[in-house]
Image (cartoon, rainbow, N blue to C red; front, side, top):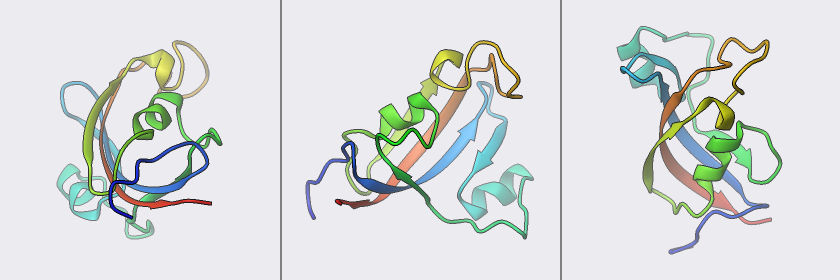
Length: 110
């Protein structure tokens, strides 16, 4: 398992912290970070997000950042609107630049 890098087709598990430039957290998979940011919801299950790479289950910049990551690797990314929810549109995050801290916790090869 050592040295495996995430690639299209893999199902990966990733913890993430999403914030706006300036530091306001809007979403996270980590309970401690959610509590700290005042976003904690007891109804939510805080655990790593599972994503099948190449299946377009998450925004494009998020998926691109995961490619090539190794287990236990942390990466900080800043996504312009075109790599996130688009420059315009109905999504509340349209037109926004988003920052993420990613921590890859697992890679499953099909």
